[in-house]
Image (tube, rainbow, N blue to C red; front, top):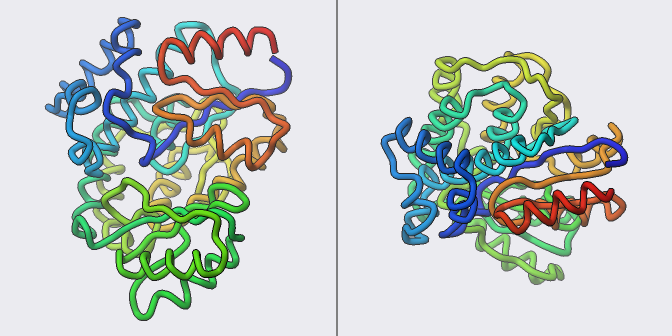
Length: 313
């Protein structure tokens, strides 16, 4: 493979019922990982990922451990093939899998962290009271301006800077709705609600920072042994303290995904491999830099295709 390689890991919104089934069926290591995760949480992750109702899977406290598990299953299988990255990054929740990949967090600790993170996020804002919407076709500055006008005493803020003209907003559901209507009126190509049950990366999450820092304080977080680029500021986090602080601040700060990808390309990354359910990040990366090679792995077929393509490259 020419140039350097980054593994990137998706966050919430990538989940779907049936995710991970093909991996668990075809690879004993993936199946064993899911079984061990179920024991850690006392939660049947196989049922949750493969056969649960969509509404159940979309509840934040369920989505987070489920997506983390499927992404870690893919990581485990890829590592069995002898492939390791030069850099890792993740989108929001995906940072926890990136830190597992970097040796900063054990899978079991990451699982406990995201389960509690999901519970706290849901407790911060009742189901239905908060929302997130993606706005496509407008600049981030325009979206920020619309948010300011649409807030009217409520919260609606830029939460994810996903691509040059894809920005996600989060906040009170009514304010997010006003923002969506205004964005369409300003010429947005598309506006749609995300399948999440809380307004992540907005100031509505600030109330849980203290309790979540206690959760992280109880875990064995180590310095990453593979460079980890944080979505908080697109900077590498080299120590356990820096990693911990970025995970706390990440709760109520925007995900700067465009900057993360541009930072990685400046560092010499030419190949990105998305590990986990769906291929949301693959599409975003191509919109940020069409010159890089992007692959995704979520099942046996995509694993074989990616291995064949990267071997040629």
